[in-house]
Image 1 (cartoon, rainbow, N blue to C red):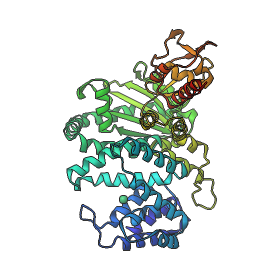
Image 2 (cartoon, helix red, strand yellow; image 1 turned 180 degrees about the vertical axis):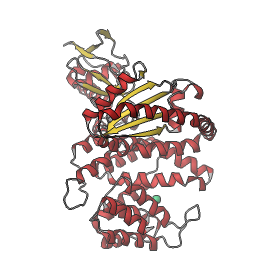
Image 3 (cartoon, protein in one colour; image 1 turned 90 degrees about the vertical axis):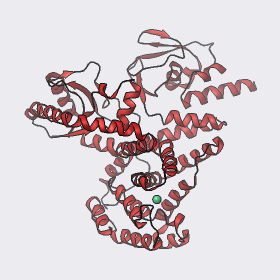
Image 4 (cartoon, rainbow, N blue to C red; image 1 turned 180 degrees about the horizontal axis):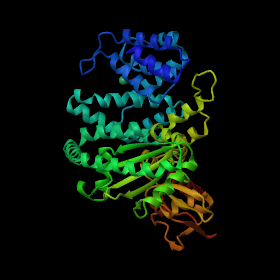
Length: 486
Ligand code: MN
């Protein structure tokens, strides 16, 4: 195992301190000596797999060492001082961070839950590697969950769903997020899971054949452009299909786009060149084009999305992106570290959390923590977290053409506050695509919005039942509090 791990690290970090990684492996191996997993395997297998999962993200050697050692403080006789003496402060702090997260219990007590979330968010802002190690740990635990008793399986799955998949999502690590979702889905709704799985398998053969035909057609059209590209076929995750069935209230047989194609190329210009080929050569589904390159998602996701109806009458979603966008789409925040590292001559990853792209990923956490200053109520805080971690985002534009991102379900009032808090405070209504709508109007992606203000308007108690974003709500509360004092 250690040879395999060393080879994986060497591939992306030619100058890595492999002796240190081997030392961490041996140390963990000794510390967990005689301990076994529920599967009967030696415990070190879990430490190795956690580290191996992290090499996918090309993380630095300190993170790999910490992953190997992540359970020694909690599950063995090893103490902090010993770890520090052997591996230094950085690795020890990482291991300690992971151990602390394990101690946060997310039970029904609202006050405790809010406090644990707060601690967790602070830890993530301080060093994101801690939560990434924890995600890899959880991914391996979920992959091997079938060895645990059913009650325990459910408990861990629910915790993963409430706590860890939102983090994987917001940090942009889609690859892990979709795998976690399917593993949780199987535990929590086994009947639904197996039903969709068998239907999916029954349809996949003919689907894959059709997909191949479409792939060839696309290739024929792009080849003459003489640009670099590759095409990946992409099955959707089962949970994603299930969510779509629920959202659209449709049976499985009515879900058409079970598969998608990704066209990955070298530059942004070539993305648009490929897009125009697709647009002119294929039957495009109405309203199916979204330009996430011009307007990236909140988590920095970029791609062109377009859905075609092929000659074989197969609906296929096509995503067009550059290699860099692709890496970011799969590995999110971790992709930026790698990107930065390319500029580091020593070969060591430089993990200073000053990267602008990275800041972007952590912005949502800062929003939550900032809003909490005005929120004394634990329930309100938990609602803010749920809203900010909301899976879906919408985009509207201002009259100047600036894009504003809002969580799904955001109202006209949220828009006004997103433009500026002074505009929110004086907002009497919003003009949406030329029509005046009330403050509680729910916005949709693509709408053009203009906030209308009146000097004599003031926030009222009622506004708290209209605004859903943390930013708007904390501002309204602030106004109401100050006003009451006066
Ligand atoms: Mn573990």
